[in-house]
Structures are given as C-alpha cells and as structure tokens.
Amino acid sequence: MKDLIKDEHIEIETDDNGNGMTMDEEKVNEKYTKGEVRIVTEQGRFQLTTVPSIVESEDYILDPEFQRRHRWSTEKKSRLIESFIMNVPIPPIFLYEIDFSEYEVMDGLQRLTAIYEFYKDGFELNGLEEWKELNGCKYSELPTQVKRGIDRRYLSSMILLKETAKSEKESQRLKQLVFERINSGGERLEPQETRNALYNGPLNSVCMELSRNEHFCKMWNLPEVTQGELDGNPPKELINNPSYKKMQDVELVLRFFAFRHIEKWEKITLTEFLDRFLQQGNLFPAEVLNEYKTLFTETCELVYSIFEEDAFCLYRERKNKWILYNRPTKVIYDPMMYVLSDFIDRKDMLVSQKEKINEDIKEFYKEYYDIFGGRNTGQSDVKNRIEKMQDFFTSYLR
Image (tube, rainbow, N blue to C red; front, top):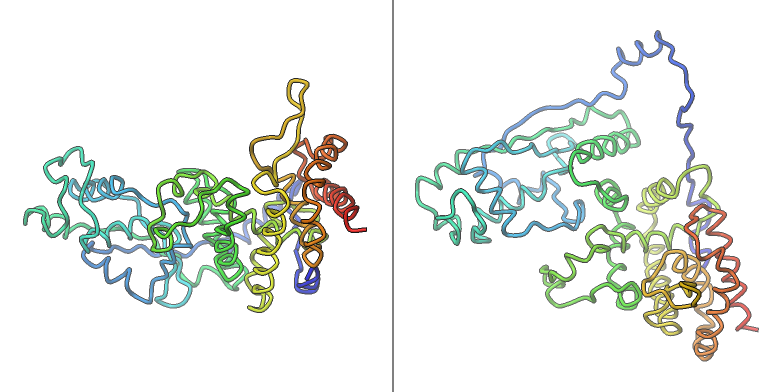
C-alpha cells in the first residue's frame, strides 16, 4: 500500500520566482498593453429579498467547505442585519464566474448565509446595540416599516468574469491571487484555510472527513464527533478549538498523504508543496482516494494501539529533567505515521510489544534529541527523522 500512487501521478512543478530580474521598460509596457495579469470584473447589486433564491439556485456554488470553518454566532449575524437597518455600508461579496452565468462564492458566504437564515426565520435577533427594541425578534415578527426598510436594501457584488483567465491553470492562479488579496485586510488566513477555499475537491473532502477520525482526534486532543456535529450543529467546544478553527487538523491529514511523495518536494517551501500536492491529488481516481482513506484509518488505529493519547508527544529535557511533553507535535507525527503506515500488515507483532516500545522510545528521543527536539522542517530534516524512526520500529520486527 506504500506505493499506492506511483510517482508518475505526481509532478510537482518548481517555479523561477524571478528574484533578481531587471526591468526591461519596453517589455513591461508591452505586457501591460496586452492586458496580462489583469482582472476582468463586473459590479452588481442584489436586493436582500432575492438572497434566498440565490442561495437555493444551482447557478451559485456555496459549498460550506469552500469557506473557513468559522461559523458566525447569532450575535454576529444580528449585527449584520442591524447594519442593514441603519443603512451602514457593507463590503461587497466576491464571485468568480466559472462558466457563463455560473458562479463560485470566493468571499461573502457568511453574509449570504446570515441573510438567507434571517429571511427564513432561522434565528432571533440578539445583541443589537442601536435597535435593542428588536432583540428577540425574527424577521416575520419585525414591525412592518422595519421589514420594508430592510427589504429595500442591497448587497453589492464584485464578479470576476470568465474572460479573466485564458486557461484553467491561469484561472486557478488568478483566483488564488484575488482570494489572498481580498482577505489580506482582515484576519490572516492559515495556509489550509486558503487551500480549502481555492482547491476544494475530492482529496480535500477526504482530508476533511479523516480529520474527524476517532483515534486521530484522541491523539491530537480534538473534541470527538458528537451527534450534534453529524446533524450539522457542531458544539461550541469544537468550533472554538484553535486547531479545528484554523483547519490545522485537516492539514495534518494532507501532510500524511503528501509526505508519501517526499522526493517530489524540491526547491519549494513546504506550504507550496502541500498546495500543489492537493491540487493534483484532487484529480486522483476514486479508488485511489478510497485506498488512502483505508491507509490513514488503519495507521491511526495502529499508532493509537501502541501509544494511545501520548503518541505524538515528545520526551524532552526541561530544567535538567526528562519529561513527556503534554502536547502532540508534528516532528513526531510526520515520521511516526509515515513509518507505521508501512507496517500495517505486522501490527500484531508491534502491538504485542507496546509496553517495551513505550519504554524504549524515551531513550530513543534522548539519543536523537537534536533531531526531534528542534523546529527544522525542511525536506532533509523530515527525511532524517523518518530514517531514524524507521530503524527504531524495524528493530521490533526481526
């Protein structure tokens, strides 16, 4: 299963980033005149009363996985409605025309969803400051003049037209450029949040699904799956979890798959490597993704069977004492998952020696503390940790 996807399926390109280029004024002028790297846009306005039909329309793609996991609270949704009541200017939503008159929502899904839920009586207004008299009211319960006032408001939109890009590759690049820049003025996005927005597809969905794996969650101190989450109402404990909110858990799953092709990681940063792997991974056949899911699930089960919740915790020195770090770390997760995924078929032999392995690994971390105790995250560092851990576990299979 290790060579599940052969190298020919993965071709990670490296770019010349142009550092050190000198300006040729004539070529720059020609580039500008030809309209290279120029976004073609169109402005629009939606009357608020039309938002429910937009959300329910097949012409607008509003996949919840396309946006961050941040869910607006009732208070935040209410403040948006209060802004409409007072006619406070609201930032435009950004749409990308993927086909003529068919759009992806690049930015603004939370606003659209809040307006949709409001018109569907999905929540009661709460936390209003200027219109406190309306707290506790649903849309249908508002005074007539207030409802009419809201109904005549508009939501602006900025549409990136299909003509912007001449190819699918160029389309993806420009979407990334625009997405990053329209979000640069607000809360800084984590790398996986950006990937989730720009490269949503089959592999991304697999990573999202597996990030809620029972054993994975236990080893990363993540709240386990609840019935409320399955019903579409995740508990606050989960929503407020930093790793979940920033999608760091999803990135961990992606790393497991990407590092199976670590030799392809050359001349680019880890972030770029993961970006490009996800883009190409979204094109993998369904049977490959199913094998990936099985491999990740069985590897997590094996790791947990041996180490339980302490699986990815480093044994380290603090104040002249060696102690088990109380939080999991990537420098253990990456090589341990990589190595043990090779030994699924010999799991019984390893699990039968788990007590000895748990004792011996403390000495292992002591011996190689300079390798596992640092923050070096380059390709050679990861490969070095994999090699050392490969030797460690192999010694129990002789």
